[in-house]
Image 1 (cartoon, helix red, strand yellow):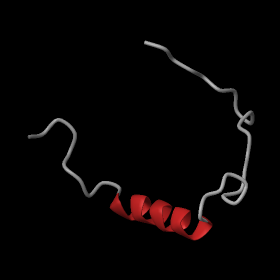
Image 2 (cartoon, helix red, strand yellow):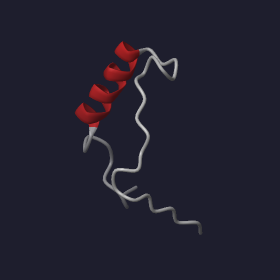
Image 3 (tube, helix red, strand yellow):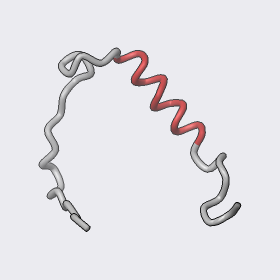
Image 4 (cartoon, helix red, strand yellow):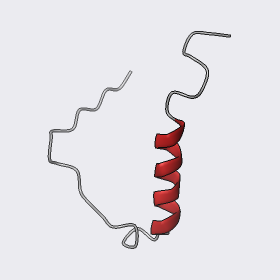
Length: 46
């Protein structure tokens, strides 16, 4: 298994526009993911 460890502060930063992503839709997706955290089935059940 490959394990990649990136040193803190080494991530490149880009705006949504720089990578041709709709910033409004990106924010909606992030907000949805945050609001949905912990609402799914618990790990190891079912």
